[in-house]
Every structure is written in C-alpha cells, then in structure tokens.
Image (cartoon, rainbow, N blue to C red):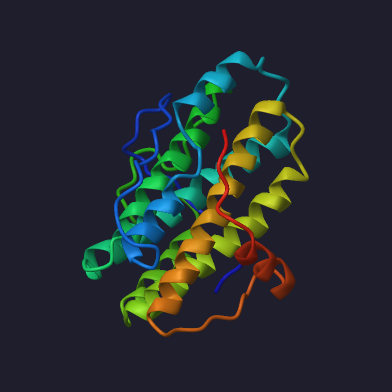
Length: 230
C-alpha cells in the first residue's frame, strides 16, 4: 500500500461535528456489538463546544498543510468503508465505522473553517481526491476490499494503523491546542476502530500482520480496552 494518509466526507456541514452512533445490542462476541463499541469513540458535539472555547492561534504553513492532509485521509477512510458496506451487507461494522469516520471528517472540516482554509475536496464526488496519491490509494483499497469479506476487514486494519502512524507524525508539526485536541480524538477513534476490525477478522478466521506501526504497538492497542472520552 502506498504511504499516504486519509480523506473526509464532503457532504457534511462545515461547522458540525456529528454525534456518534448509540451502542447497538448484541452479545459479547457478536459483530454488531464489536462495531458499536468502535463507533463510541467520543467524537461529538461536546468536542465542537470545547473547540469553540479555545482561542485560535497563528497557523503555520506546516499546520495548514497538515489539516489539508488529514482532510483527505479521513475522507479516504470513510469512502472505502462505505464501499465495503455496500458489498458486505451482512456485517454492519463497515457502515458503523464509516459513520464514525464521518464525525472525524466533520471535526477536521470544522478546523479548516475555523482558520479560513479551503477544502481540498470541495466539489468532488465520493471516491475522488485532489491528490494523485490519495486517488491511487483509494482505488487500490477498494479493489482489495472487493476480493472478499476477510480482505475487506484487512483493509480496515490497514487504514486504521496507517491513520495512527500518520496522525502521530502530524502531531509533531502542530502546536495549536485546538488542532492537537482534534488529532487526539482521531487517534482515539482509530485505535477503537483497529480493535473492532481485529475482533471481526478473528471471528471470520482471518489473520493480519501490521504494515505501518510496529507489532509491539499493534499488540499493545489490542490488549488495551476500548477508549472513551472527549
């Protein structure tokens, strides 16, 4: 997979951070329960209120580029998961995590609006990206997701660990408190999604070796409980 980051749902209102899905019913090992726990990652209107309470700070060129990058990366995750949701309708994890990604997209979009930055994906339909690297990555991931349910779940794991790696790297060039707060939320959500996809993959008899983060970090995330908080 190409070393690129992710992209955001373009149809969401610019200044709205969508509330997360309520937890669905189901037994401890049921895919529905796994997916529901993944989407309850704390990205909500509470975050929007806290961002409003924080003063804007001077924005560096690196921070502006970082927001544009994360805008595309979160959209990528959303669009790939929506593609898988349409293919693999018996497993709700794709549509539920896509809804969670929509809230991540909205959070990044709110920062773009807050700082008066252009949306790099304005006017583009789902599955289309402003950079060639993101476009190629999207096409690669949907092709892999089409091969089978297990393959689609592995793609979910690839996207989430790529997100974790890239958000951590982006935090190194950011010092604005509001951006860091959103990035921490995105990281928390990605770790929850990674846990959910892993459990769903195990239920399907699949296996996976991390590609973008170390095996030690991957194992540590899986060994820790689902995270909550705003």
